[in-house]
Every structure is written in structure tokens, then in C-alpha cells.
Image (cartoon, rainbow, N blue to C red; front, top):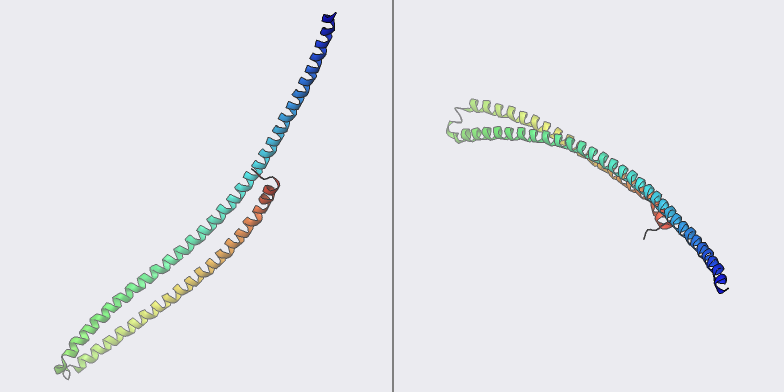
Length: 193
């Protein structure tokens, strides 16, 4: 009799164990499903964050490209103006050499004071030549002044362009702060450890 009474106990223990096993299995399944759900949500957030980051990086890259293109065009203009100035300075140097030659000629002629009376007509002709050369130099100096005025105008244009670029960079900075605001809000809502 004691053996018969133990047999139903064993079956009731098995039923309890089986129920506990099923509960544990369903709890484990719930935990695994909740972990999968959390991982899916985290993966979605990570995908959205990566897409947002790529969009922001694309906007920054485009802005840098525009900035570089603007700077390169201005540098080309400045180098052209500097080349023009170099040409004008070479012309001025050539004219100064001519002036030195004329001054040397004048010194030699003034040194011949004993023969001034005999060579007055020759000196008048030389002075007329010097005056013509001086007028030519004056014309060239006017050209140099015009080029310097053009350079000043170009530098003013560069300053205006730089001011516009500063405004664009500030606008970009404000846009980046505004675009980063949703990401900061998301970080406040779901902080990463």
C-alpha cells in the first residue's frame, strides 16, 4: 500500500515539475522576445542616428566644397592681379633704368661746363628728349596708378566675398545646431550608458 500511494505522488510531482518547466520556458521565451524587441528598437535608433549623421556630414561636405570653390576662384583672381602688378613693376624698373641712363648723360654734360656756351643748342635738344621721356614715364606711372586702383577694387571685392562667406558659415552653424537638436532630445530620452 505504501508503494501505491507513492506512485500518484510521483505523477503529481511530475505534473508540478512539468507546469514549472512550462512556466519557466514561457518566462524564458518572454525574456528572449523582450530582448529581441529591445535590440530591434536599439537597431532602429542606431539606423536613424547613422542616417541623420550621414545627412549632416553630407551637408558639411557640401558646404566645405562650396567654400573651397569660392576660395579657389578668389585666389585665381588675386594671382591674376598680382601678375599684372609684377608686369607693371617690371615696366617701372625698366623706365627707372632709362631715367638713370638719362641722368648719367645729364651728369656728363653738366660736367662739361667749359663747353656749355658752344653746346647750348645740343643741351636744349637733350632736355627736350628728357622731357619726352619724362612724359612717357608719367604716362606709365598713370597706368601703374590705374592698376593699383584695380587691385584695390579687387581686394575690396575679396573682403565683401569673405564677409558673405562669414555670414554663410554662421548660418551653417545655426543650421547644424538646429539639426542637432532632435538628436540631443533623443539622447535625453534614451541616454546611452
